[in-house]
Image 1: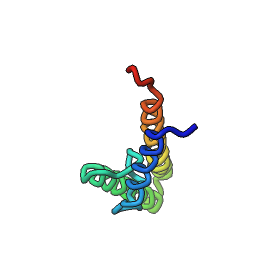
Image 2: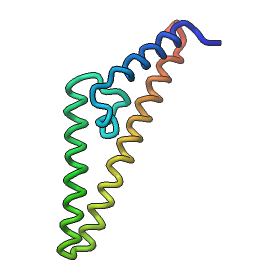
Image 3: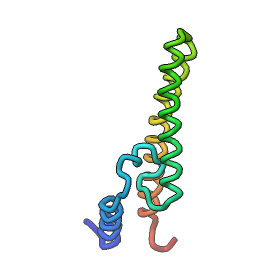
Image 4: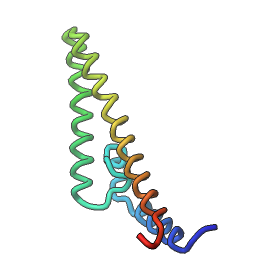
Length: 104
């Protein structure tokens, strides 16, 4: 059975998702939704870091530093994986908070 508070939470999530100003930055945001300018700054910084890793791997391949390129590519792959895991953790914490009994 769907409770009223659950419906309100779903409506709030929908409204937040519908007013994204930078939908491309949500890939690089550690939070599920971009709500403030701080979230935009963090997502922009991580997107810039990803681009720097990508360019540096190409440069290291050009100069034939294969091990360095391999390490940089691994870091570039691990960055989005870590961000996705942090978004999932925050979503689980939010859902767990909704399941607390009213007496708490």
